[in-house]
Amino acid sequence: MDDFILKVGMPEYTYAFDHSSRFLFIGSCFAEHIGQRLSDLRYKVDINPNGILYHPLNMADVLAHATQGKSYTQSDLLHRADIILSWQHHGSIYGSEEDAFLEVLNKQASDLSRHLRSVDTLVLTFGTAYHWVLKEGEHRVVNCHKQASDLFEKRLSSTKELVQVYTSLVDSLQAINPDMNILLTVSPVRYKRDGIIENNRSKARLLLLCEHLEEQFESVSYFPAYELLIDSLRDYRFYGRDLVHPSEAAVDYIWQQFSKVCFTPESRSLSKRIAAFNKSAAHRPLYPESSSSMKFAASLADQKRDLDQLLSKY
Image (cartoon, rainbow, N blue to C red; front, top):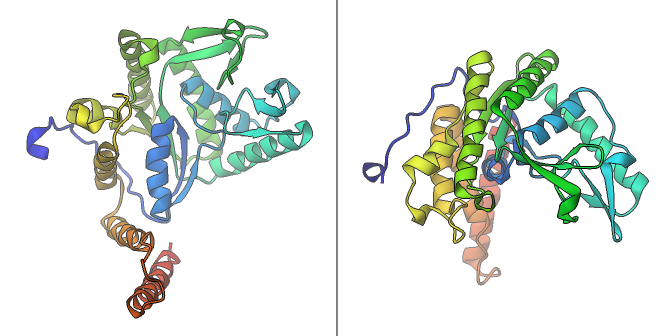
């Protein structure tokens, strides 16, 4: 396939990951794709503790909240029918009783704070430069939670604003964890509801933000997920039916490029073994009581034991 695509020059990093590396992924659904791949291959991964986030300032709010030891309060909550939601969390995170829900949110924030102090690599995937502000109180929100549109104002962040916020944020993260690597990506998913022209201008701001931070901080680097899909895999066969989200084949290709430049050879080899085991373990025999199925199950148990022993070294 490489003969039929425009190749993207891949970066060289000063570090390489293995199964001892600890990751934190925060950002858009594309962060979840790659983060889940790592989790399936038994890397140490935490993915989107506040749920999927799309805008850099929302991600910065979550990280600043954790680094500063702040607590979520009633002002962060929205009561909708018989459920309770948070303006700072995705709609997949909700509760039914206020005090209990706040306790859950604040425990998650406390866990995130501890994780940030020990994580090896923070991966941030920026999705869009558009965000929503609750007019009452000028409150920036992660999700509008299907509330009336006239309650919110849609804004396009400037590159200057994003750079100012993230320069301060990276300084704060380095203060609590000087050894942390920060890997930036831009989601290749187009936000067609904003308009194609508007989406391109939004993505441009995100790409410029990544460029500025990479130039300013030695601990910050960039992985070209955006360019791999938009430039290398520009054919629509690499997209889903909505023509904006990457297909499984596209995610596979980007994952392959990611693993080539980011992981040690030993870790890639171990990952292949784990992937093969996962594929075999997902198989459901038609006749589980047969002798061949029992032999297959015994073989899987042996493989799992061997993998567990290898992984215990990390």
